[in-house]
Image (tube, rainbow over all chains, first blue to last red; front, side, top):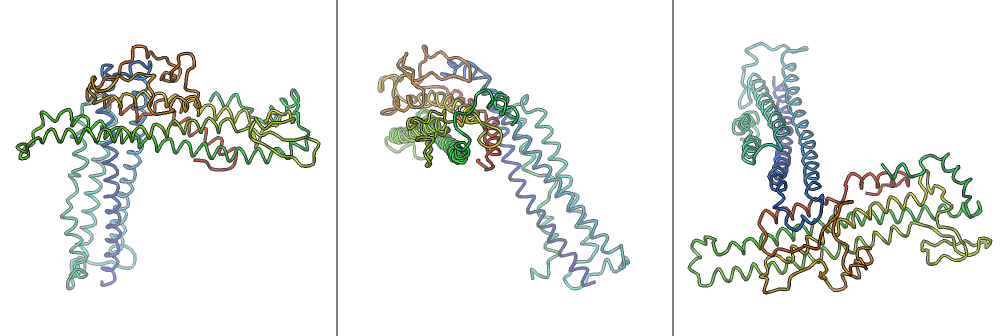
Amino acid sequence: MESIVKKFQSKFRKVREEINRWDELQSCLISQFRNASHIVDRFQLLQNTNNHGVLNCVSGMRDALLDKQIESLSNILVSMRKTLEEFHCIALSLDKIHRDSRQLVNGGSSHLNRKQLQQQVGMKPSLIYCLDSLMFIHEIYNSEYLLKSSVISALSEIALKSSASDLGALQQLLVDQPNIQTEEVQYVFDMIFAEELS
Amino acid sequence: METLESAPSTPSRTTDSKHQTPSPLPPSVLRLWRPHAQRNLRNQWSQLASCKNRWFSASSAGRSHATALVNSHLSQRYMPDMKLGVVSDMPGIRKRACLKLFKRQELQRSKLLVCYKDMVGIVSDMINISRSLKCFSKGSTSSPLLQFSYNSADQSDGGDGGDGGGIPVFTFYSITSHEKFAEELVQMFSLELCLKRLLVLEFMSIGYDTSEVKQLHWSTHLYDDEFKDLRDCNLYCEVTHGPVPPRFRDGKSDIASLRFDNQPNPEVLQVYLTTWLADANIDTLKVNEIFTVVGEEMHVSII
């Protein structure tokens, strides 16, 4: 029992690494999104010849600028999709950690019964709590990945048609990460590592 | 892709051309010529790469100065209507703030000018490098001591074109092909320099009262000896006695009616800043392609 709990704790350490990586990617994604919406904001401005001032004396300049902006925007979209793919990897990895852990108690030589799963020794968490928490964490991060994925497809669809306010709403959705309840995740970690904390 | 086609891309084609115009240099000289030419090309291309990097850092520094300049200018312009809250009772606060913003603009203008000057210097360096790709043999070909020079002015009785008779220096490309690649780079950066000049002039004129300063023109010096430097960059037109007008690639421009606005709309200012950022005349993909192709040819990585 003791050793299984230890194994679970190391799984949770891995989970924590994945979550830290997620947070890094999150700030990367937000800055990519900001850059994209700056370009979209400027796009309207650039289309109007009246805004080009002295540049109007250079023929072809306006179209060249618009082309360059579209080029940068599509570059940003490509890198956003790459970032998204990394989010996906994290979701997959969390899923694997959860499945491996299930294997730990159900498969192979050790087949633990319900009572053993619920047993709690001292400050150590029960195995069932560990399993449920791993599933919970995987689920919220996976839903968040799906949300991000649809936000970014929406961005690619509407990029040059939408107004700045639409993009603002999308950005807020990316920033908020509504599926991820940070406090609850923190609470889970506090429970799993209660011994070390005290 | 145009340059790739024009370059002798297969060794067989090169041997063909050798039959048509046999190299003026005897094989023994060519054997010695090649390592020198290779070393020279490696050096010059790595310098070109560093010019490119210097350009982009100067350009990005210029953009931040221009952005700061525009922001100070707009703050100054909006100062009379700005709600100053608790400090609004302080005597002369608006006037002092305006003065400070004005001084800041002067500082940012001079910093922007320094960046522009750097960029002129970089283009002139690039042109010099692109002219130093050849490798001439020096002295008599019969002399046991062969010397090589990368400067056509030093060329003595060797009588060679500095290109080893058009043979590939490494695997595929002759000196002429290398020169074409370099020329293409120079062309892009020169065009962009003219465009940046137009923007610098505009940034120099904003914020001044028309009475305070003489109206800027395309033919106004931005700094002492600017035209001398532009001449070095082939960007001074002796016919019109002024800098070559800005244009986009093969497009035209009409600077006869050019008038710099000292109070442009914020929208216009934003378009200027975006234009600065966009480097419209520099085809980044093409630039990277040239450096990659040449780097592979020379078996060195030049980035």
